[in-house]
Amino acid sequence: MSYKSGFVSIIGRPNVGKSTLMNNIVGEKIAIMSDKPQTTRNTIQAVYTDEEAQIVFLDTPGIHKPKNKLGEMMVKSAEDAFRNVDCIIFVVDDSKKIGKGDSMIIEELRKTKTPVFLVINKIDKLENKEELFELIQMYDEQGVFEEIIPTSALKGSNIDELVSVIKSKLSEGPKYFPDNMITDQPERILVSELIREKILLYTNDEVPHGVAVSIEKMKKRKDRDMIDISAVIYCERDSHKGIIIGKGGRKLKGVGKSAREEIEFLLGSQVNLQLWVKVKENWRNLPNYINDFGLNE
Ligand code: GDP
Ligand code: K
Ligand code: MG
Figure 1 (cartoon, rainbow, N blue to C red):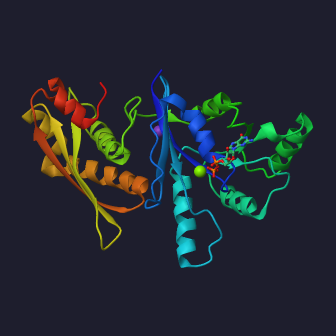
Figure 2: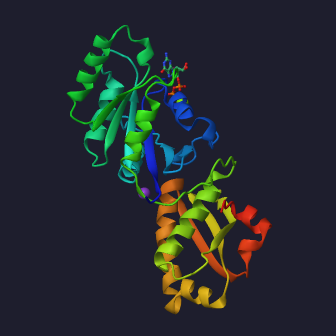
Figure 3: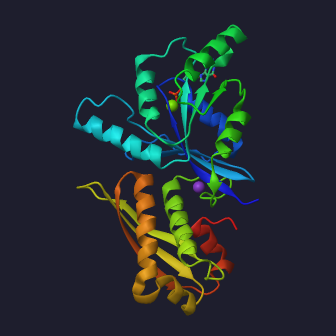
């Protein structure tokens, strides 16, 4: 069976247990992305990896009532984010009624074609099964959720079920992050993996030993919403270099464009991407290089 990967947006009001839930899902295999200030639109929160699949959890801020222009932009970016993920996890707690905040989120979710799962968290706080059935029914009547999964993030109940439901929505894809990788620069690694993926796609695997991508520079401009990235693509032979660049540089241009679009989505910023191709014989055999690239092969 082929490897699966994808992106999941996890949303919900503050305090419903999103962080606890994610910690529970990723557990020991965690590659926690630091709780850094919300500078990007889609913050990578955590990465779950197992033998079958890798799930990248994104935090999507800004699903709220647009009070002003900025608010409208935030909602717009949430919509974009919804469209670009494999599924959305909407987390609520054991509250007996659907509050105003949640109603607004549900109305946003109603508009998206992306599958939405509801997690009813904190079920350990419920008195009996009857209460849970009532909650499930209340949310089911909304007609928005493909499945409803009750959990207790605190006790670790039904987390496996949630993971397998998410997996059912992932398609074939690469392992964006190395196993058990703990890094303070997850975005750098992700960017390099995205570029690598595009090269393989555009060259139809014509480059026999693959390539390594090293991010030489990744810097946000001070004066505007733009990140400059320059990356070196290492291959083993001149002939491979030719294949990657393509006639008149066409292939590399295609790689750059499609990689840039995905990177912009992930970082939530405009990106100026510069790609260079270099020949480095036997890069695979050089342990330092492999470390530098963050590869785990
Ligand atoms: P977030 O704001 O959505 O990320 O919520 P947190 O993960 O920070 O959790 C908010 C509070 O709810 C914390 O005190 C958690 O310990 C608690 N909490 C999270 N999940 C559960 C659960 O399943 N059961 C109970 N009883 N408490 C929970
Ligand atoms: K995918
Ligand atoms: Mg949190």
